[in-house]
Image 1 (spheres, rainbow, N blue to C red):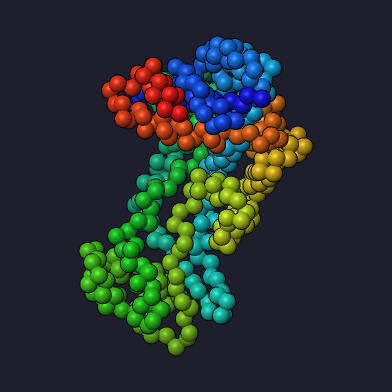
Image 2: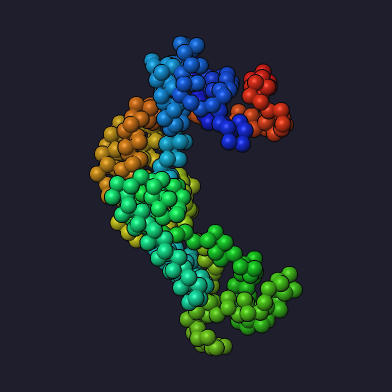
Length: 398
C-alpha cells in the first residue's frame, strides 16, 4: 500500500507549490511547481500503485486526486478539519462581542473562596473615559451602517465587486460581512491592559494585602525597582483596588476585615481566544478555563449551541468515531448557526474524505518536519532557490 500526503508550500514570495510525501517511510518524493489540480493529476497518473492519499481541505487537491488516482482513498487530514472548526467557532464568537465582554467582565469581577476560607476579589479593569467611549460608538455606528448597506445591495442582486466599488470598501470586507447574518462586532485592541504598571501589579497587591494602602508609599517603593511611570497611574490603580474591596475613595482605615485582592487572570476574551479555549483537550483545561466555558454556555443560547456542536465534533474526530458523523451533520444543519451550516455543507461536499479522516489513523503530521527543512533550504539558497535546484537538494538529501 502506498500512502501519500499532499500539502501547500510557499516557494517564493507569492508562489505556492505542492509537497508530496510517502507516509509509510516519511520520505518526500516530489515538489510540484504549483497547487493546481491538473499538475497533481498528471503526477499521480505515473504512479497507479497509490492506494491512499491524505490531504488538506483544498478543493484543487480533491479534484486532482479524482482525476489522477480515481481508485485511491482520499483522507481529509484531522488537523485541517479541526482548523476549519476553529474558524467556524471564531465566526460565531465574532458576532457575539457583547456576550464575550460580559463573560470576561463577570469572570474578572467574580469573588472566589480559597480552600482555607479566605475570600479573594479581583481588581476591576479600568473603565474607558467618556470621550474614548463616544469615539468607539461612533466608529461602530459607521461600520454598522456600511454592513447594512452591503446586505441591502446584496439583496438587490449586486455582486461583491460592485458593492465594494459603490461603498468604497474592499471586496474582502464585503465577503466578511456577507458571511454573517448579524453584525460582526469590532474586536478589542490586543494592547488593552498593557500598562507600564502591569509588571508591578503583583508587588503592589502583595504590599496592599500586607496592609500598606498608601499610594505614595507604593509609588516610591516600585520606583526603586525600576518603575518609570507617573504617580497618577499608581493612584488610579489603587483606587480600583479600593473599589474591589468596597472602600470609599478617601477612606484610610476600615474596622471590617477586608478580602484579599488579586489581579484579573484574563485581560480580554477575544473571539479567537474563546474558540481555541473550547478546542483544548479536556485534560489540558485548567479550573479557570472550565469556569470560562461554563460562563460562555450560560451567557447566550447561541454560544451554548455552538460550543455543544464544537465539542461533539471534537469527540468524533479525536476518538475516530465515524459512525457519529452523520448524526452530527444533521444536528449542525438544523442548528441556528449560519457558520455551522456552511461548515456542515463543506463536510457534505467532501463526505467520503472526511469520513475516512475520522476512521483511518492516516494523517499529515509527518510532513511538517519536511516543510520546516524545505524552508531552511530556501533561506540557505536565497537568490538561487529556483524549483529545479531546490527540488534536487530537498529530495536527494533525504
